[in-house]
Image 1: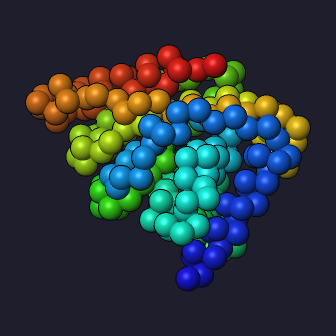
Image 2: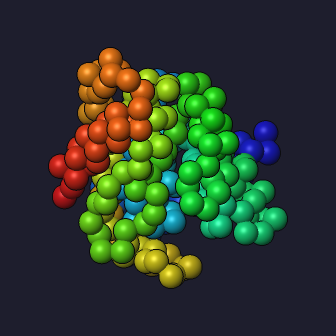
Length: 215
């Protein structure tokens, strides 16, 4: 109950930030659906991206269907710096990821929870500094192969203006766009050996889909 209340109060506050204090346009929301084992893979522009991607996909349905609140792998150095931040992160369904991002414990935890719910993930592993969409990491491809998740490519634009790197206070009166594409077809990779090379090729396909639907 505490997690439900904390998360939904926070989500509502973010809704005000994104849709009242800023102008956010969402397209392709119907592509997301409500099925479990759904992975929302997005480019990464700010520390608020995970809140935006999950909120734009499911709010306000998540108020009555808490299972739609996505899991969010989160960098320990950003979200677990203090006891208060750590408590909030746990209530926001964050999964602790150690610096360096090759965290097998975190990967195993993601494999456990994803089949029963929804997860937001940023394959680049870091925020962009110039607005471009960088390469994805093979670890995300391994997660997809292990869970056979339904993969939705997500493209966000404008979040660099709302919360630039180095800033801690969100800006207002900006334009934000969130685009949810159709599920990525990767059936051909399931027949290949589950190697890092296969995983990298798979995530390269996802990143290409994210770039293709940029505005």
